[in-house]
Length: 404
Image (cartoon, rainbow, N blue to C red; front, top):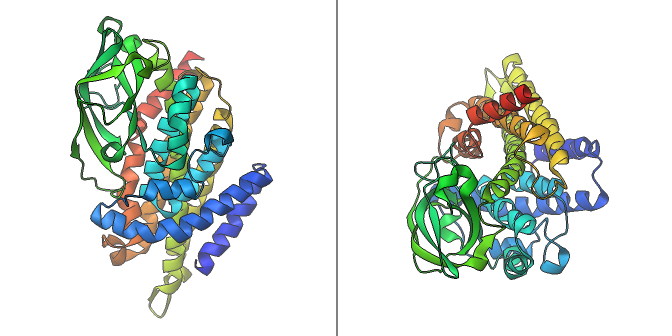
């Protein structure tokens, strides 16, 4: 850890103090920062360069206490709230963005959604394994023809057949898809009802009829495995349904609001790292006989990056505070819907600005693919696309403003 990183970490401790973190939360953040820096950060270069995901990494994260943040302790989790989960995501993403992305899909989109909406039997069956890393989780929503309009254009179907459902369709751009053991899947159970005819299922990937059609080659976050999933007469028991039939929209929408707040935290963590790298390089790179940090144009860039990071953090933490303890079925409308979309919108654009300026500070070296700042730069676009594009986020904000 460089002196610059240590100084920023000390500054962050003071900033987080203003958000009334408990002693336990501080201890968790300190622990996650240490293990992410020591264990996860050394992996990030190879993971990106080779599209490599270590086979035992989820189990290792389970042993390190990085999984099941919101799960009860009796099920192997940490028993913390969503705000703490976001702090964990922020720190992991800072030191290894690919792990941060996969961690979010596993711990929030799959595990936390199952905790909020699953039956007691489903929770007891799957959550302990998800907490330990013995099971890897994913979320199956986006389809080849259904991205921003994921609910209205959904083509994947689940047809009731006796005590089972038979699932047909495909999902694409699924984080953890190629390595997942369980998938929280959305499919239409009543085509005549449109989006109101969607149901949620918890699917085991060893079911006959399921296959990973392809692992996708991405521009950024390359170490996080992403795939296309296909279901061909995939038969699952009716007990695999999460919540009542045709109520999947409420599961989706409440989960998406929290996802957007979590994405804001991912952006903050990565932007924070971009600031550190920009500062470090500006201090050691010399031109015209002195460090480029002494030039006012470079100082202006650093000041702008810092301002973007801290503004995004403040907005994101506000949204997370509102999401914490959100009742089951809440979300997908009203103030929380608007606030999380706005926090995600701002954080995504703030990270884009921050990493672009930090990459520019690096000059020619920032253009080289094997540098850490370049990996951050290539990853940034996803954060203006995933969890709803920037345009969709703006639509949500405007609709809620006009509805009020």
